[in-house]
Image (tube, rainbow, N blue to C red; front, side):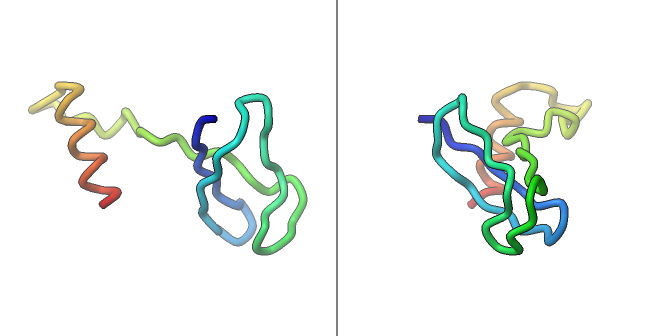
Length: 67
């Protein structure tokens, strides 16, 4: 099962969840608002530097950001 990152549009609560690709969470477990969640992309490809646009450099940077 894949891992997904979610953020609530109401209370900004962020969390990760493992579930089937067919499943999509919609209700925030913290503030209990309905239909307030959206999936947060794991990699933000807009942060690629013009100086070093190699994919390996981008992956390494994101790993460091999450440590």
